[in-house]
Length: 588
Image (cartoon, rainbow, N blue to C red):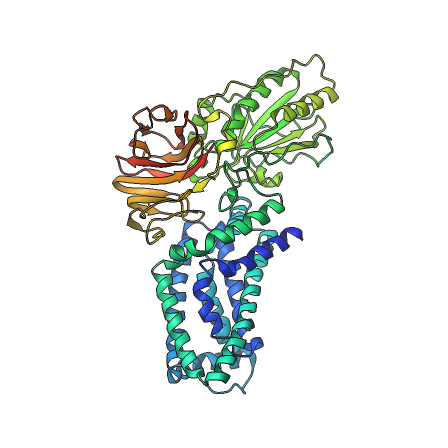
């Protein structure tokens, strides 16, 4: 219930978001009508459409995205037609007549006044507005959509989406009532009702043109999205769902990589029985394991994915625990739950497991069956299970490795294992596995696919799923980025259609990583720059001092590791070959 209220509050805040501002003039045009037959049906239509399309978009794949683009175009046509009816009362009556007749037949009413918009008309116009509203996404909505994509459609997810939609509809209803008073005052004092009607028609047409040209995703985003995101992030923090600065949650993170999300509970209470492992689509380093075969062993289940920087930084500790205690009753199981499509390829996972030196069993959880069984929401996530098969503790994200090892040792001691080896020291970790410099991280995980992208500042915004020649704005502020060259941006990634192409990002962190992949296994050459210069000693493990590197496989690449005092820099990566796939930035 508390989470639903928080989600409702986040929906209320969308009154200030870029996808709501353009439709406010349309809402105000209903302000002087009877609310029960005009405003309320419109708001209901918006909420139903929003929740329905959002649910489909979360679980339906690329075809739903294409459908939503068609719906967006249809909605623009409907709103433009409505704006024209505001300019001409005669045309309004002609166009409204079939809607009124249909509404009369549906609700068995024969007394609708000529020219009066009925319930069905308002509901249909609400549906049209909802199709424009659906692409809107702040951090909380991003969290809900990603959760739906990971765990599949559930009544709980749909309920939360309706709560978000109801919150936004509530704020619009308030605006509608306020607009009604303003509208009535203007008509009483100026006698200008018809001129106001026509003026609103012009405003709606301008809003339709602005949405069609992408102003709602670029100009209006600059004006309003930053403030609403800060409010929503505060709500997330209150709900205990916020990630650390290194990755963040939110659009996408609603994929929810967590960093230091909280220490494991010192009191080892029973949190339920260990869920089944039967849903794994494959196993590496071991035949399939079951709950029954693990009875009598202490088990550590580690949810991870191989392009997740938080998972990679926790990995040296997980490997050390496995090596230290495997002969003393501990079984470590890595559950690989993919975030990106390429992480579903078992060959990619097998290669990553080998390159990372993982020797313990790894369950491939492409269908998120084990993930759902544990009701998990984070990468990485550690669950500690005793010899009776009960979950006794958990830890989300990086950090508190000493506390996690104490839990392992306590469970082994309770199970009767004696002469445990001494607690290990911190493992020597290098490259992407090295601990982050959290004191100097002011940049969060940033996705490049349009579904969860934030801070994108190339003029004109994204051309969703279509090739476009992008350029940079005059300047980039901290945590803003842009594309240069001809790219096709889809919900998950951007693909360079033809070389050369470039990505620039203004960041503040010691380390900068980028999840990249080549197309069709053809290597892609690239060159990195910091403030226009070769990185020198500040290069990462996947570049040299001149900033040169090659993308040979789909994974996370460390491109910058600053050795000098950490300060804001403009990062640039130029791709010398086409076909590169760019997924997300992470920092540390």
